[in-house]
Image (cartoon, rainbow, N blue to C red; front, side):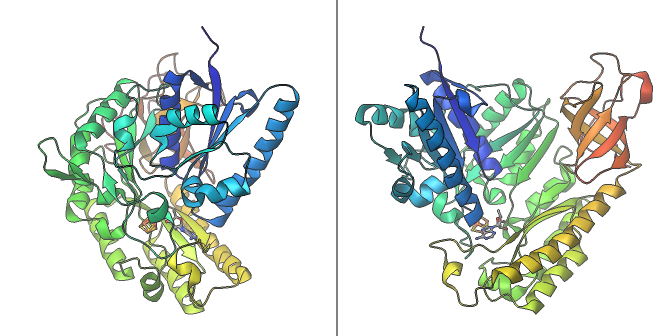
Length: 469
Ligand code: 5AD
Ligand code: SF4
């Protein structure tokens, strides 16, 4: 038998890239590639890339510079290294990427990576770069292997929808990921069962616009996300369901009702608003106003009073006035976010906003970003602190760094270090859903002790949030 070749996949950007990287590993395993976490050990390196902001794309080129040096060292010693670029930079830049980084052997877009085995063969035959940035008619999902390459994490990702038809004027996604497309419900349910059978206890449904999900149901009728969530909740050993990322415009009554009715659906929602100014939202082509957003949040809070919200913000969009920016701060104050991501507007080639008048100076964007981030940091610290003393269900995900410690998450996605030094071996294991008392809050995590205290077995929580104080 020949030695397996080693592949190292480095992932940039969003959770969908994390999911895609796992699928790439599965796709190449039958071709004799074993995954390695050490780039020095790899025969093939694939960068799975992100194009959302300039900084993310530039990171890829610095990484390619480092890989070229590694290849030169290898070649000097009689070896070699094959370099592939997948994901959104590959899609957006295509052959321009090969001009700027001629060391790249393979370029493959996010909708064509099921063709990687062919691309590797093509490259081996021609010894020249192989490129595929098509949006093929066939769906990659129909061509991906069903076997998992490795045991899934306790909390696993599952892509249900891809692409975007919204065309926000700042965003490259509709160009890099293509038009909205949803996977059939049966394929998703089968994949979820495989993940759960292999040990996953939480599934996060992924899509660029996940709540626009409209997949074919088993009888050919269209299912929406709420219906899909309802069907997934029937998988017994699956304890928690999440979904991301949602667009405020597609958050309809059925999904709001799912937050009230489906116990396994976690009360934490990432719902990007981008700006608190209606003028800016219009220029962004967001197709929702600040009032629409307020109303949606109200409906969600009525359905699930303990729901915690997260959001994305862009500051310094072309034409954003001081008043517009103050309106964003005011909206943040009004809504209150448990967590958020915020960015300086980054002009992206080919998007409408990049050629709008009124581009802001970088120092102004930086000042606004610092002010917004200070406010968001205060809110998330307050949210963390408010959980101290509460009894919460925690899904244990992995052993911690210290003996007797386990790391899990609350329903609100907060990382929790659970101290169980006196538990008997086997009392608590990753995958358990237990009740804990939160004892302290830090910037990025919480500390907790199992509810049964020092004596051993913690009380198993029957459901995701049954024990909320
Ligand atoms: N500049 C800055 N931030 C952007 N985002 C998307 N495009 C841009 C851009 N051109 C942000 C949005 C989106 C998140 C994933 O990235 O806030 O929700
Ligand atoms: Fe980009 Fe807007 Fe689509 Fe989100 S909804 S992926 S921001 S175009």
